[in-house]
Image (tube, rainbow, N blue to C red; front, side, top):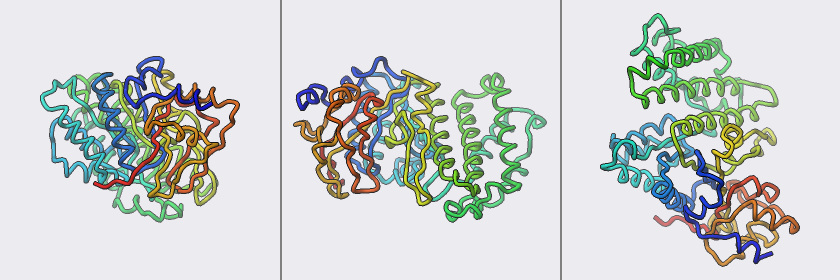
Length: 402
């Protein structure tokens, strides 16, 4: 058994990953089993650098606010702003404080210096403007979409004025009250104003779509694609706020599903633009349903990876990351009868493994699922190994000392 597993292990390099895939995917997704470990992000940076240089990928997308990420994209493509500014304002979930994320952005900007536009790297956040404590106001997305259209089509074609939007939106703190996450009565998502905004957002997107030939002839494709992002985000946020006000038992399931749906829509838009590298938690990128234990009980929903895979087929590939220890988080050496334990016995500190071959090799062994001693870490499910294209295994994750 150990010999069979060892024969599937290779050094973590772009060429080794690509050899495990039937074709170069439109979206190549690298997942992580936990957030906040720069050692895993350093590995991501190196692998993505090789994939950019050897395989021609030109977009890097991470699990961060899609609207905030526009500032990072401006910086890496044209030098707008400063590195400090984009790290402070261009990321959600606290990711801007990561030294590895800072290095990724610095490298992308350095790579683009002197490059023709067709060869420049692009950055994207593909998460919605959402946090565990709630959702952003739809103001930024709605007003940006309205402003784009108002400058380019006849005012009579628009469903409302900017002043109407401002009146209906009212103050942003009505939308961002953190108490609404656990108390639906605090949400404004089912107010009369929110209902009217949902209709107006749909009408604005309809204008954007109906006048695409004119808009593409009179503005840049980048500006048009950003307007489409504004529309997706506005509609997604208003849907999310509507469910925030839901009192049914399906509330949390719907909220989790809507978040991954927003992610999937953003990823499919990036895939339409060109080949992209994607990084997020394994649970968002896997091809099966995700699940989580919430304060209201267990919830289960289709992951963004499952939604994208259903659309793209072989155009989507998922490489999961697994790990042995994160001792500074209480994750010690894995039991030998788990998948992580079997990989931990290999001599390599890091390796990439053919997941379907590993699943076949372990078929009779029936490894156990590793228990997670820490809420922030999600071990591999041995029953779902074949749903991954490859597994990157990291034996030990040290604390960040930078």
